Image (cartoon, rainbow, N blue to C red):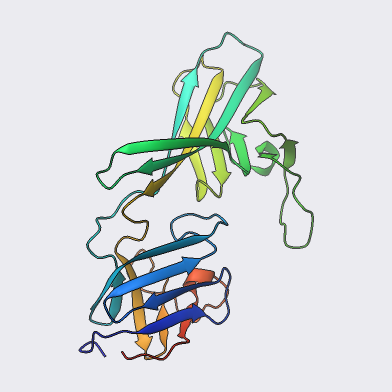
Length: 246
């Protein structure tokens, strides 16, 4: 299989969530279509075309593009003279870079749904800030106290001197602790950056070729691939629907 580099056909999830497909064309180009971007945990339509190659048992999408950082974050601290309250601002900043790496556009939005806690990441400390109330159902898990708002900033009573702020959200792709360096600060701004690159979001992405009709798409940090997992979307098996050759 490794000797034959002529992959052709469309591979798509037979099961799995979200759904997506990859078409390998015989001219070494590909088209990737999904309802979730491969670089962000976000529901939005995504499609991209590029080049592919094969190395051993691995198909590589856009091997010529250098790796990039897609999610970044930082904390800004300011003094606003308020000793009784803390002003917390949470920004989702979409940044768009051209093919030369120059920042050409930014969009600053409200984070749809986030959890934060001061000093310790414990249930009793966690507060959720969201546009809408969390739906309570068997699959919702633990729901902390919520602040429902369409603003990016919330004011909370200042109790103890905060040493750090924890933030968890899909845009951040997990939970992160931000250390507070200025004890006099009372306005804290957490910026979560989603980086979009004009020359491609798919960069050196590897797929494991299982056989002539199946590939695995989710590579672990140790280089191995997740197999036989039909419930994790991109970790699922992709089945070839348009027979080609391997």
